[in-house]
Length: 397
Ligand SMILES: [Zn+2]
Image: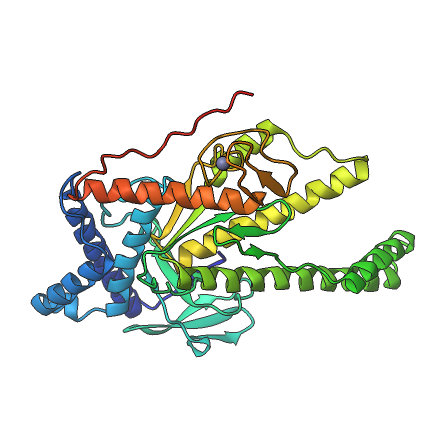
């Protein structure tokens, strides 16, 4: 996230400090409420409940009411995200914020007209209740800025960071859970049976890329011709990147709209498993190198997809341990290392269930996440389920 040096006037600085104070107050209020939450008790207030309490707090305190509601609401949203990260085991538990330490606030619903360039090295950003504040235009500002964060470091310097983070999408409220598996043959497989493919270069474009690469190898260093070929290659690669990004945006929006809970494998755990398992045997060194490269690109795309899902469906993405998801039969629960006929086909030797291997894995991911949900409900006061999930039986043939 690119960061810029903010240059407020002393009067502006005072309002910025007030925004920081409000954000800190609201954040600490949320921390306080969550501290009272214990296992077995009614669940801690969710984001909607906290928004209601914020409205009450604003009605009660004139100084809070005088501040920006965007700043205060976003502090709550940041806290909700921090809590989701904590429960997703990717971050530590959110704690108190102290004055003068990690001070800052976030502004959302930023319009293109809210950021402008005044001269070569000076820009200005419109901040609610503050007005236009100058910043050093030290690098280009990303396109499609949706929000930004203003922070003050320990030395009292102000910074501005732009982000193109999308607004959360409301859950459909149907209770639907989907498992998503990072496929080998496809980009992603859903437990619904859908196979999703991220777009790549078209065949003609691929051929052109190969031709250009050959031309580049022949071109003389430092020549005009070489620069032109290089630029053409960069354009083609950018086109592929843009298509994949576009696919990630569309896919994450679609999933966030259709499902309440989206279950994915925990990348940190799966990378360990996958590397220990080794990779597909591939003939020839070039092919292996190419396959490795493709995997790298796919992994990056997968990471971006999960990140976007977390932006668009905060608190609704469940990361599960992927152990056995590719070897377990999603119909009868038996774990059988030999059930995987090939990279693409799964056939259970116990019950005969046959499916696309990635879809079978996606269904296991979904079911594991649904099992977590049952445990979570049991904690919140509902009766515990007495019939335990059937434990996977190892098939020893
Ligand atoms: Zn089976």
